[in-house]
Image 1 (cartoon, rainbow, N blue to C red):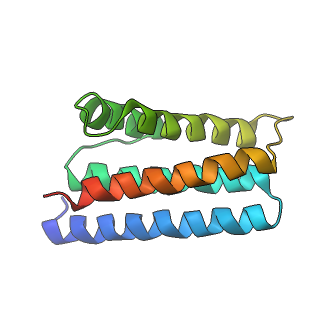
Image 2: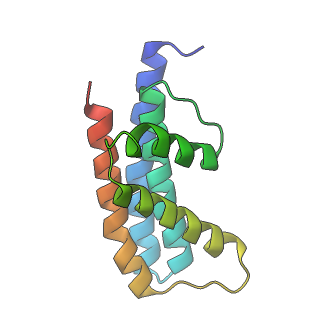
Length: 132
């Protein structure tokens, strides 16, 4: 069982992971590794959402569960917009394709469009984490 202090430390770690993953995405973009950049963008968002769920005491054990709990507790309740949820879902879908489909190669235009969306999504999630 996690103590409140454990929970706080893990939430902080997840925030750091989110920011580090955004930095990694930028490095991947600077080196034309488009699929890897999308992977890191997705993980930035995933880490942020995982931290939010933990802070709020909401359990999710899988990536699908994280997406489902975000929808149930934050989008349905209008704490986050449907558009924000779509950013997360779109990154999840593209990350899946880029990582596992044999002939999916993303390009600079795609990553240039997605990167600011990922940054904004992480910022929105951090606002929710910071709420009491």
